[in-house]
Image (cartoon, rainbow, N blue to C red; front, side, top):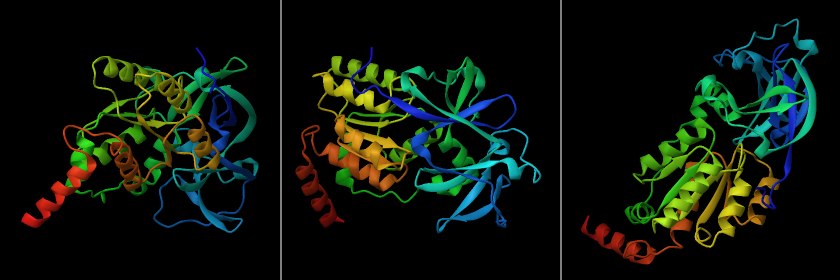
Amino acid sequence: MHSTTSQSQGLLHFRLSLNQSFAIGTLKVREIVPCMPLTPLPHSHPNVLGSTSLRGLTLSVIDLPAAVGYRPITPEERQSCSIIVVDVCRQTVGFMVRGIDKITECRWDDIDSVPASVGRNAFISGVTRSDDKLIQLLDIEMLLESIFPDEFIQDDISISLADQAMLSRCEILLVDDSPTARRQLKRALDSIEVSFRMVDNGRHALEVMEQAAADDKPIQILVSDIEMPGLDGYELTFEVRSNPKLADAFIILHTSLSSEISVDRAKQVGANDALTKFNAPDLIAAMLQGAGKFKVGDASHEDMSETQEEIDKLI
């Protein structure tokens, strides 16, 4: 089954070793440049080769083969290498690779989830085939978290008791194929003591929503990644909006893409909001906007605000 939102996306293929091809979505790619002189960065991660200036922007350059477990790029090899400049998760970084192969078109439902045999620590978000060759999709979020862990820790989330109570009364579903993104989402909601359900793909999310509606506990807030194997976030949104039993959900599409194109597309398919990963306060604010649509329990948002005022007076 293909919804009318089904579309192909570009994949940039590149080589980290002689035998294995990897790819990333072209919407993540800012540009590709030849290797250039790098300035060493003291106390940086071992896989950060240094920094360079590109059109007025200073960015770190990562030895991508070494970062995912292949043989590091030697200084002698660098002159024949390329740097893929990516703009994801509010960061612009360079990935040095051994070679650029080609750009192909691929549908998300032609991408399979990572086999369980690969293991949890592989930097892969999905697999597909091109010209009968296995292509592994790079999990950029997991990779960046391993190199810049401090950028992925957000412990400064604070909301009022009334807002916490309002969210707690909502049925919330989170869906993301990236283990890194799921950890971020879990930390954010656990920190404000809000319960939720979480799945790792769009098809499972749709099944959960259908079952929840059948149990008369429909999902009210859906937070979904956009780029996922199988049923992507756009198609999931389309399917939810097409089902009268699910259509009232407040949908937030949450993406590592920094492109305005993805945000515009999210609104076109019926999402209420679209956010670039990962800013916990922004996400909680969007979820509160969604919670405000529903009168949960016996109290509306206004009622809860009055309750908070009374509690504040007592304190």
